[in-house]
Image 1 (cartoon, one colour):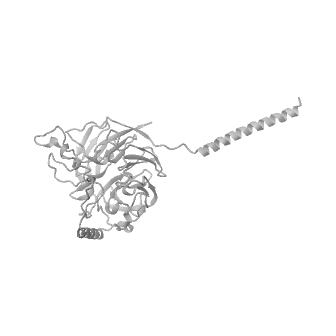
Image 2: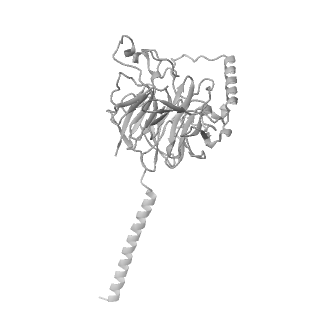
Image 3: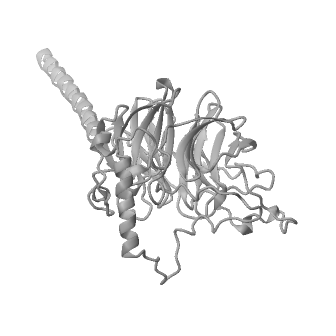
Length: 433
């Protein structure tokens, strides 16, 4: 056989093989490029029916208005005892006419197994946080005044409170902080947690007279002139309390004028800074209610509309959820507006963007958003605000939600939820790998 021919043949074969390898390699690269990175998915959880254990002392818990996990992964629940009705307090009568129930304290401490390991009874309210030193910070409503107060979580002793105005806006501070505290008569409760939200078919809410409406508007105008948006203290009620311990700061969501992010020194409680929607400085926040008008699926309002909650990520971003406008605003710690996430924009009534929590990984890749109206926890990509999935639906069975109001996440990624309305309970959900 001709040696030159064989050499050329082997060269052609080697070239062909190399071409095939190159095409295959490039093809795989193109395929990977077309396919993109692995699809990000929502985490999965399962309902834990064994947590919490039955409450002691014949207690019946009220609607959950605050939820926090402490440094030991134990759970603090702020509840609303005034939600309970007569039929739930029959063990308090003298003599009792049933073996359950009794009014609970408004702060209840659970361990990881679901046992009650502590409690105290501050005025009920909305929003809470606990620090690493054993102090609780609670958004109280006391004699009509909303504020954040610092308590010793072991003794319940009041230690300090944020600066606040001596009066609330006409008609109260807004939000859903619940009935104001009053002296409790044993065995007697309220009309219930949904009494103000439901009216019989065909029955219209009584309308104030034109004179009463004019008087109310005049009172609101005078109050806003007395306490403009630049007021460096709490003016309305509290929707949320968050701590940034490394920077010694406390964040409070004051519901005045639809919501203001207010930052205070964690040690002295001195006011440091604040802002509104889109990073508006206090001097830029308007008092015109037209700037807070919103219709589901419509344009976003210029200012926060209502029920503002927030949380601060490890990398120093503030996520403020404007529930009544179905959106989340992202800021730097100094209030610089970065981006807006819109979520479930069709949602009316109470809105969709409730409490804000993060996934437990170091990067906090995901946002966990509790939704009072749709009764879901939404899982969002934190960078883009993309919805990856959801958990839960409306219902009264274990693992369902009826008024999903609060959420907390421990160091192992376990989710705790708290409900108002007909829910009135705390539930636990375990991660599924």
